[in-house]
Image 1 (cartoon, chains in turn cyan, brown):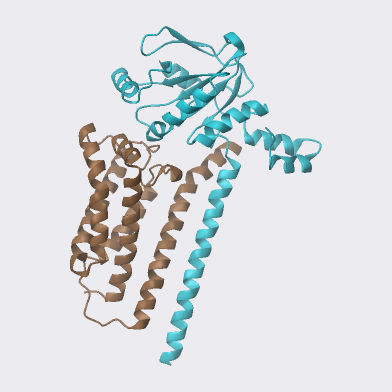
Image 2: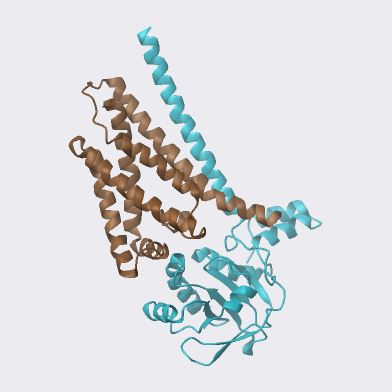
Amino acid sequence: MLEALLISQIVLWVLVVALAVTVLALLRQIGVLHERITPMGALTLDRGPKEGEPAPVFDLPDLLGRGTVRVGGPRDGGRSLLVMFVAPTCPVCKKLLPIIRSVARSESDWLETVLASDGDLEEQRRFVKSYKLDDFPYVLSAELGMTYRIGKLPYGLLIDGAGVIRAKGLINTREHLESLMQAKQMGVASIQEYLKLGRTGANGGTAAAAAEKPTK
Amino acid sequence: MIDPAVSWIAAIAASLIFAASAIMKLRDLELFESAVINYRILPRFLAKLFARLIPIVELGGALALVWPAARAAGAAIILFLLVIFTLGIAINLMRGRYDVDCGCFGPALRQTLSWWLVLRNAALAALAAILLLRPNGRTLTMLDNFTIVCGVITILLIYASINYVFANLPRLREIGARYA
């Protein structure tokens, strides 16, 4: 009897651990699925001006008094504009700043970068100073954030040389930022749209397969 | 008084959970620091000090749990920390700030505040509370050792699973918002 209990105890424990491993693997797969279906800047909420629409034009004063910065509208030389919405209160923004800097430098032949924020002036000045952001134009505007319905930070907005919104989304990592650039090069607003185009297109099956390895 | 096998399961599991949490904070102190500042409870300089002190205290408490003589003291430290964390979360939830970064993990598993976190902390507190009780003198057998190892593995797996569920929750809501 005691031996039977002992065996049953051991068998039960082994099964419990196996079940727990299975549950963890299942939840991990759900997490990966979430990443797969929302890779483009993690999320593009269907709010505010849409991709493919002309960007509303704003003329905003630079925080450090270096003239005005125009967000939206056609640009000289056809260069694109990356508007990064950041804030001193957003921890991930601070992690992202060096990445924004390196991308802005490496893509500077076709891309200008502007940082946008909103809130207390003194806090913003301290933020710019402590993270040495004075090589970027820096604008403060609640109106800009409201127009684009920026909910979560850091948020990226890519406007092409003609003043048309090309891509936008929540940017948590370097990959998100690069996917913003790639979305512009591929001429689609987001991975979601890319997949939708494939599904609704005449050659649905092959397009879906092509979506697995998008060409640059 | 509590059975020593139960005490050991709770001690090893809690020790590993809190040591891992402390190490993740120490590996990215800058991020944890801005997360603490963003809770908007402590003034800036105190928040910076707090962010540096907490992971060290947490690690100390976690290590004390596996040393039987210091177990109750370690459990008291961990309980104290849990109360502080939960207060910080609850205050911000009551202010209506649901989109604050919790600072619990690194940037890969970004979690925002929710009442679920309060519930999770309550469960962790229950685990730590077991450790305040003194184990009775029963001698452990081989089967006890087996129970302890399997029990610890199961608790850690379930804890990791719960964290995945929490990390997935807001993403699921976002998908709902997209296709609604």
